[in-house]
Image 1 (tube, helix red, strand yellow):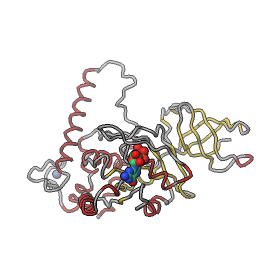
Image 2: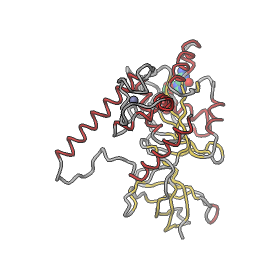
Image 3: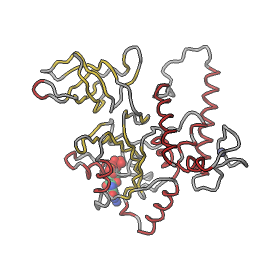
Length: 336
Ligand code: GDP
Ligand code: ZN
């Protein structure tokens, strides 16, 4: 008989799952053969997925993933399924806060359709006036940033409170911003390795290799994700606007003259150009358009050729994309 479980960690060839109901002798975890793609559907297994396990060898603590249950949400990169909030962490200093990079992380987080929170780390490195200026600026973007210092312990209790809610919270952000230090402050018994920010680029080494779920309090899981510095943008230019709270907000108040408006500041656009992130939005839009044009060129160029192992293959299947768009619209409605 199949047992229900949650994927807690992916390793090279295995995944570690936590059983919904403990097995004989109170066994809670099993190591399962990692079939990267499941059967006919070809779906990929992600951390956070709810799965069914069969072929269980209880004495050995082994099994195999037999089926994948439908997902509520999916963070594409790093791949985490069924998360209920995404926490984007960036440093105020060391490395310096880069608004474009932060925007790329926020866009990735917004694409899940779940709640997005913003944490500003290394608060100890800036003076109070500089901290306040960043807070005010980011509030203008539509986020209520929480300032923390893992070194001095500031903001940690509040962060724990925000995270200790049922479901999975994912912590993501560039490497070197202090994510491991934060997790250590939140879950001291883990003692994750913290890397020194080194070299000219002030980037930490990539110490976290795999995504893993840590229990924070009963029922609340935290996913630590591998550091990476440049998240992908959506594939369609029209998908970008709804990922900016400022645009969503302006479209509650007004309607653009053209239905497929890309909000480039033209007359008749209800969004306009008098907002802080307009130049960043424009930069991202141009990048998405250039990428779309390249993709089109490539698919024309390779028409008739067998396409195998394409790196650009979207992680998300079509059905899920529709679900998260619906959720996105829902959350737009909830915003007003
Ligand atoms: P990660 O790559 O995001 O996991 O970052 P780490 O936790 O490995 O930290 C990178 C570097 O930033 C290390 O040298 C830490 O000591 C330093 N760091 C982390 N948190 C803080 C903080 O709150 N204040 C200061 N000043 N440095 C910090
Ligand atoms: Zn417009």
